[in-house]
Length: 162
Image 1 (cartoon, helix red, strand yellow):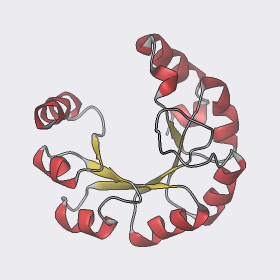
Image 2 (image 1 turned 60 degrees about the vertical axis):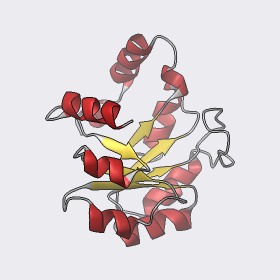
Image 3 (image 1 turned 30 degrees about the vertical axis):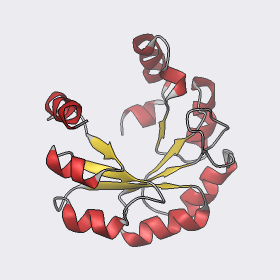
Image 4 (image 1 turned 135 degrees about the vertical axis):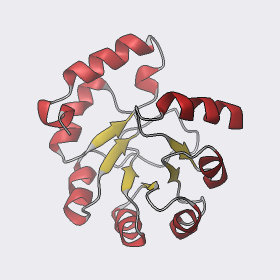
């Protein structure tokens, strides 16, 4: 995992933000731009005390109260969902739906990235509800380059320009 992360860091340096999921030690070892933490991972304050001062730290949230707590604790952004049912994670929580995005965005000021079962046709609804971005996995699992191109072409202009 270390060798893969090191190679990815080299490829993304100066080109893209590189975050490590869950593993603060690996993020530190490869000089990642930050880390994304789940509810059962290390507390945010631990990551903040270990990583470089300007490291980005995101937190997975599933409820309004978790989102508010993440912001209060100093998260730079939240992952929120699952918005829809997903098979990507065996232990995924129940879907929260698009309407929950609006509720959370009215309560927090940090960016919200919607996750969970998101398909290309869902983007207008998700962005209209206030999401700052999306995280998608299964939508790209086949024919990845073509799918990425289609997604990027369909983004609203205001999202593309962020």
